[in-house]
Amino acid sequence: MKYIYLRFPEGKPKAFTLSYDDGYIYDLRLADIIDRHGIKCTFNIISETVTKDWGEEYLTIDQMKSLVKRGHEIAVHGVTHTANGLQNVTLGLAECYEARKAIENALGIISRGFAYPCSGINDFTVGTSYEQIKGYLRDLGFSYARSDEKSFDYFLIPSDWYDWQPTVHHDSRHVNEYADLFLDIKADGEDGKGGLPRLFHIYGHTNEFERKNNWDHLETLCEKLGGKDDIWYATNLEIFDYVEDYKRLKFSLDHTKVYNPSARTIWFYADEKTFEVRPGETISLT
Image (cartoon, rainbow, N blue to C red; front, side):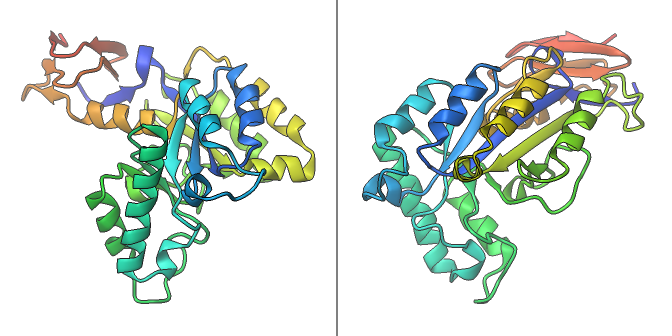
């Protein structure tokens, strides 16, 4: 057995996710559109929009709850949308703590996702380092932190969940090019990258669609990317949890057997076969 590759639920080789920031009322329109195509989104909420009245352009608590009921994720985007890299460590830690607590208490959920506000971890001016920020996010129970795109990595799963770089912004001139590349990837690895699992992640702000009056752009992307048999449509957190459970698989020394200690079924690809191992199960690979 030369290589073993993760496969997403039902043995799918690809996953697609969205994440949209700030909690605008237009998130509801985005949800209506993507729901029709079976696509999921993570909505990153500024907690002051929950604890204070930021006006009619922002979601209410009940509207946020409705997004959760529809299968989407509510994640944390700070208290006041202040960049972590431009904050003293103590202030940054306090803001992330208060933001998560406010959102969880208001919505009755456990919110383990984070998206860096503003310039996030691109700029550092007060002696704060990325490692310090990563440390307090981890200590506060955040499972991942989404940043912004820095380079095109051919749809690879993040190697550092606290610097989760999405693939592309929806307004990028490359977005349709990347969508076509993603759709063309074959599960058998004939594209030159082996049988690696692939992840396409689009991000943005829904007020951008409203301001530019280009909701048809979102419709076109969803029509192109939605409803594909080889793609798993998931929230940011669902992808994190699945990948981490895959990493917990226990293989025998000669890789003829595998045990799944997690509470979910895991799929993987090896020797031109797709394997399924259920929770608590040990299977033979020979």
